[in-house]
Image 1 (cartoon, rainbow, N blue to C red):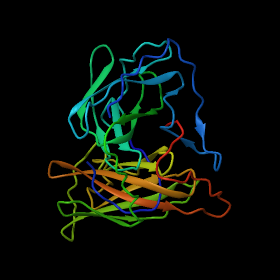
Image 2: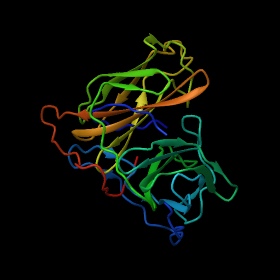
Image 3: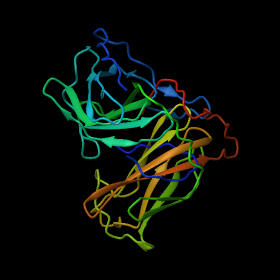
Image 4: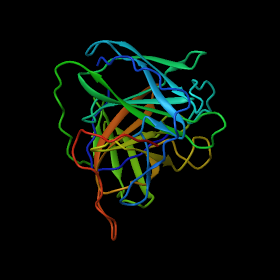
Amino acid sequence: MLALVVGGGVGAIAGPTAEPVAAPPPGPAPAPAVTDPATGADVSGLAISRDGYTLDVLATPGGVDTPGELAFRILGPTGAPVTAFTPTHDKPLHLILVRRDQSGFQHLHPVMDPDGTWRTTTSLTAGDHRVFADFAPEGRSEALTLGRDIAVAGDYRPVPLPPASATATTADGYTVTLTGDLVPGTASPVTLSVSRDGAPVTDLQPYLAAYGHLVALRTGDLAYLHVHPTGTPGDGRTAAGPAIEFLAEVPSAGPYRLYLDFAHQGVVRTAEFTVVAAAGAGTPDGAPSGHGDSTPHGH
């Protein structure tokens, strides 16, 4: 499950209590795909329901910065919980959490009960958080990304969007450098190169069937876009670093937040960038502005 959204950017490292949501009535009406009016590109993560599938959140952590259970189901076209999934990038479902100001990114892999309830333990800061479920129901050729908000009551202090930068540094000495320009409506090559204490890292470990996993979220509405790696570990062509290459297509100009997960020496780390996609010739400047409110839809 590689996702992508572009923007302009600098990196950092990642790391409410809502009432349980009642299950919708059986047989939710299929939701049409959301198409960005600027370029016709398909975007994801803005809708609770799509193509007859619904993200049904059952429980959320009960306090600020306090570990608690996040539980949810994927309801299918008949209204019943889906229990059969086709793995994408080594997992049956990927769960992404991020606060509305695009801070507090988490990439989790919950465990499913036999009845179709997914559970994981996490802690969240005060504020509104976006929950993204990225999955492929068995029998469906393409993955879906559904999204909805959950709220954590408390002293909410929004974090300003970091300025655009071509480098991101982790607390334990890794630096990731971004090269490549993101042009809306075009499959743009993007390379992220990993170094540690100034030396290139050439022994990255496979993580989710790739040497890196990239999630991109459009600032403003948190549209979730997919980014695809250009190689696979063990294919005889793809080196284990320092460069990790992706093809990214963003729907509109404007700022995006990029989150790169990579594994080295048995630890998964996250580097975060703010990136600004500049409009190319004939490309409308249609990205939502702002750093918070959203309109629902997904993947």
